[in-house]
Length: 185
Image (cartoon, rainbow, N blue to C red; front, side, top):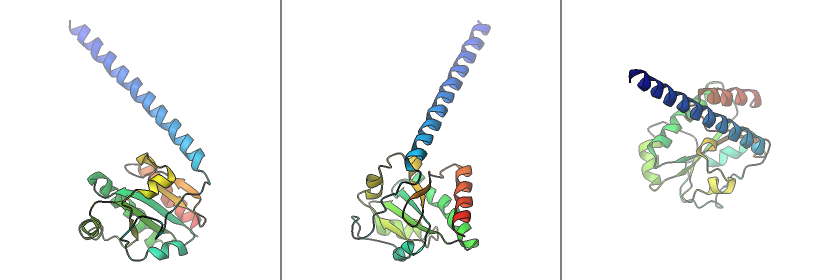
């Protein structure tokens, strides 16, 4: 009986491992397809007054003066999504520290933009522009329904240089930093 229990546990473990391997392989395939799709393609970066927006953080107009910009969509009513801002802040701090010419723009979909500004954005000491995107226009216009692609590094014509959310992906965060350092010189 003990041998049967061990065999069943081993079988379950191996089947979980094969399921995980299949999911990982499927995810890699999806990433390769997304990168191939977005490589050099222009992203639609809605600007005022095109976007359904009543609130923007000061400095929005400066984003378009730089030749390089990172755009990100955040659900401001989701705690985990808001934590993503902390990770983005590390890239912002890196570019500021190294005096790299890269702008940042956040499209925030939230029910309460003033509360978001006061309680979250200011606590993080974020001094980069954000747009209240109540309708989710950024995601809709760019067909970015998969949260893994809610951030992108764009050139001066809004063509994608790099795409992917850095959420829990330190290698991708480093890739953003090194790419910005190369392109922003």
